[in-house]
Image (cartoon, rainbow, N blue to C red):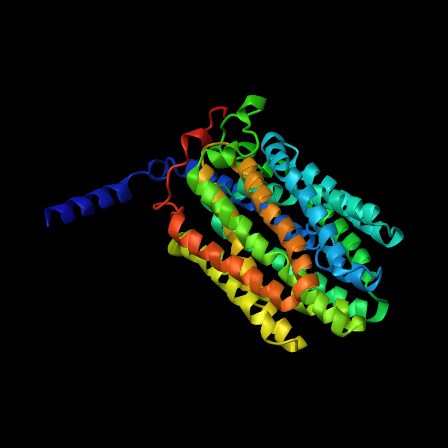
Length: 460
């Protein structure tokens, strides 16, 4: 009761005070409130960058892989190459990408012109691909595709770095899921357009579609404000940390992997994942094209669209649940689905069956695309080596992809498509067993500390 009376007395005295005393301090408060509202009305660079980043991931989807699986169909149906030669050309391109991956990651770490690097790579990939209809020799085709693959090595670490530099580590998982969703939606849209126009104009249409998407990706890149990207955060350091211009701060080659055992285990898992996965879609495309040459490109587009439509919700789900479920069980699911997919292809040559099984690629690839940068970020947080670590693991992944195309092509020539699919399924099953036994959980709360050699100190 006394407390209530005191409160009442205070309120009464406040009412009895002169208006000028009662309102003292309120004008300043009102001015501060208005100022805050004005600041809120002015879009911040990070907020402005969200939509252009969406557009970049959407339009770059068709550019980052160059001609991708359409290369095999084009060489098979238009230039009459055999499967072994196609596999070798794709392997040569993959090797060029392997060589470029780690330097590309180091370049992204060191550079403050990440947007310019993305634009330059998009132009290089497009020009290299557009020359293909005008050349026919093995050496020339291999050289242009090697150039495209080397330039495309810039895209994965650059997009991840720009994203991390814009949103920071706390929002990185969800934003990466959103990136991958837009990327897969872009792939689905491009494949749909390619399938529709190829039916009337032939396989050549994929080249002009690539050029259009490249132009749109350049415009989207330039729409991202330069000051929206924190370069220190983009390389895995804290906000406002040193820029790391010193060349000695950059690790070289596989020193990054050898310095952190979980990172090395994850690299081996990515090698086996890509070895088992890379050749599957081109082999399916070849089977469909051999069964119906006129519809080969269109059926390949159906395969891609079906998988990409599955990848969109999978990537969003991974981005939303990776912090809750953990990284390890999600990635193990991707390996298990990949093994199942390889085992199902040989059961039937029916086009509907092949396209239906191909939708499982949406689960495996959707998980891998969204989870890969998260695991690398977990293990390199605070080191300043996020992008060079991505490059080193991508080098290992590219090695798996290159060996996959060459090995599968040779197996097809000697033993047929079914033997190739079953071999790839066995590789995926072996990868799953290794990953479950050796790989620790890396999510915050269960993650091992980054190895000392991956610290922000120079690596020797």
